[in-house]
Length: 146
Image: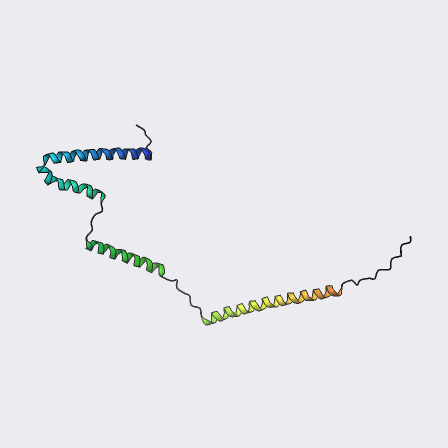
C-alpha cells in the first residue's frame, strides 16, 4: 500500500466506497422487499436517512425571522461604525486670522522676490545691450593686382 496519498488516489477510493455503498443499499432494499410486512414499518425511517444526509435542515418560519432580525442588527451596527465621520476640529477666529495673515505675508515676499528678479534681469539685459562692441568699419582691402 502506498504511503503517499495524492488527490487522485483519494478520489478513486471515494468512487470505490460509493459503489460499495450503492451495492449494499440495493441488497438491503431487496431484503426489505422479501420481508414485505416488516418492510412497510421500517421502510420510512430507512428512506428518510439518505435525504437528511444530503439536504438542508428545515427551519421554522419563526427561526428564520429570528435569524434575519439578528443579521439585520449586525449589519446595522457594522454600517453605523463605517459611516461615523471623523470629528471636525474647530478653529477660533483669531487663529484663522493669524494663518491668513501669515499666508498673505508669504505671498507678498514671493511676489517681491519675483519682481526683483525681473528688474535685475531687465537691468542686466540693458547693460549687455549698451556694452555691445561697435562694428568697426573694415578698411578697404587693396585691389588685387593682376
